[in-house]
Length: 252
Image 1 (spheres, rainbow, N blue to C red):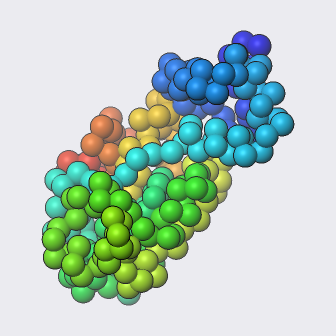
Image 2 (image 1 turned 135 degrees about the vertical axis):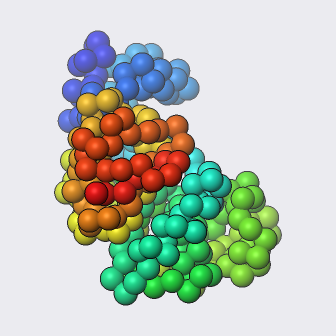
Image 3 (image 1 turned 180 degrees about the horizontal axis):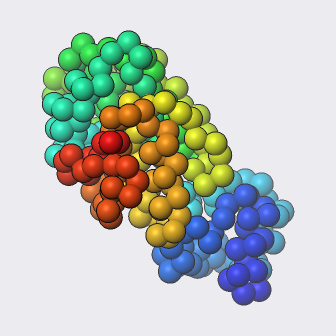
């Protein structure tokens, strides 16, 4: 079985279009998986995926999982705190964290909103990886993932349980988590702020363009769109965006 046939079989089995991802990077990860489980080749992996639903889910999680921690990229979060959140604050403010992984990003936003007593209507957080979403809903984290949380936030919003930290219900209750595939699912609409950070880097340039267009369509006028530190939008004007800070764009 060649790689093209393998990609077609994966799409049929787990509804994941590998053609949308950067091929060299994805190909290497898949070969690492085959080696780890002694599956021999692409055909061996497909056979395993067909027979073993647990392995199928683990493989999907492996391809899509992102590491994350609270207040990731302090420069960006400083601007969010001082400029973005005060600008969108209000009873109808809506925020979407796309590709939220284990929930550190949306929960970081909630802590800032609560600390500064800013108004908002709702925060949704989505990811394709159900295992990550389960961890996000639980809100329990190892020390390595909260090491950038300010000390006063740590004291106010977390409870230390053995060697882990449990997020306060006061924070967790404000975020609604759900499964969402950015490539095929409809996008929710009318947001004042959308964060999609460190997700584009996995996709081809063509797919990145389509995703940006869809995100911009989901923004209200003057809404903010934030990408990852390893990403930037070339010619943001073509999408109706203007760059207002490092990694931060605003819909014109």
